[in-house]
Length: 293
Image (tube, rainbow, N blue to C red):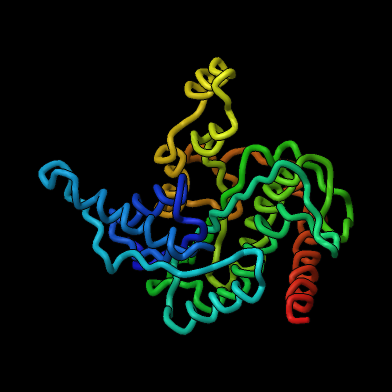
């Protein structure tokens, strides 16, 4: 089993269950979260959960030294760089990186420089973090390092505008950012394969999490139907866990239900993918520069 994996947004939902599943298999997990106190509470929840189970029924205990809490704010280039520097100074090998953040805001929100908030949190933050961590993204046994990026089936509903300076397009801000996640994984696998790094994107499924927070009592029928159509957070974590462990992972693929699936055709277009990569690099450079002003 891997000795270390780094997982962003690990305090609730799919992230929490992913930590639980992989830590039970012996992994040491760096839980990177914006709110350090909530991260510590999530860590305690996993430890309490695994140690309160009947040892005759469950032999997979998570020990305190397996779970490490670190502060990381994907909206702050300064926080991302400080986090990356801390990890590089402490860890020689990070065999698995899971970019699990998936913020979904009610509408498109632009900052004063024209960058949409979904783009910033769900893509540019991941892009900068992954780039900065590259020196330690490797394994001790010669196997490729794995980067797993949480995307969504909703990426099918997005269409990028050709040569857009801000990676804009048609569709919701969330769906556009999820398409960028798929493209990011494909480009990493093409560009960094020679460095022993591969990446995949993952659709966890329609998970029963925050989707219910907006369902009012008068919409009981909707709530009832959603419970039948959705899956639990633990079930939603299974494709990520599969991609972390499977020996036959296909680099650059889009996974759902623990198998590679067809993705949006724009993610297969080399010209579009190259534009996304180059534009992302330019945007994070501008983003970092402005944050220092």
